[in-house]
Image (cartoon, rainbow, N blue to C red; front, top):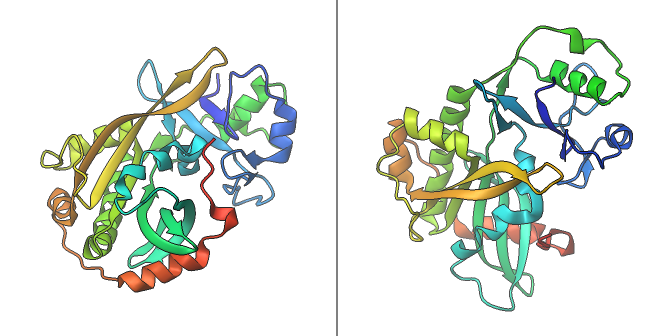
Length: 285
């Protein structure tokens, strides 16, 4: 049995999905466009694997695609309280990929009035990186669904794994670097993860000083979500499971690192205002 739980955003057990159409169109239902994860050997083919089963019996659903986290816009709704300068009448926008020192932030939830940014929250997404390849499992699912395949990868015996340590350390180092920027301009940065990744980080890094429940005044927030079946159709849905918070010093204490990152508020506001438009308006499903 294939370990792929979701393909192109649809539960592998769904009986109402036209799988032949879904696989042919290669559309990500969350981005409303073609899945950007393509095969290196064949860029014309999107992989489409969002979630897999992993772990000792019974294995659990583990997210491997960060875009899966934006389903229904729930993670953005759950950050609304961090827009402390938001007022009724302001428009909400979701802006993607804005550069800051140390890289770029996946999303910004922006409060604006008359095209002028009044407040914002940075939102970073992180799911588990895999070791090896999930492609054979993906092809096994196609075989189970009775769909044609362009190769015989489903016969491969090579397993895949989860790169827990590298995923956790890399994102914490990045967040430590970026949160100093947000702290400098008195804004908030949120890391969105699955509850399983937060549990791992809590075991492997020093997390005992993080505030639980989260405190509004902290610059760094971590929102963790469980991922479980919802309803009779077997579809999986995200649900908030934990909120913790700290600041730049708190992340440094977890990692034992020191770094500096500064950006002027005016520069970031200009970048956001240049990107907001009718297309970025937040429309929760």
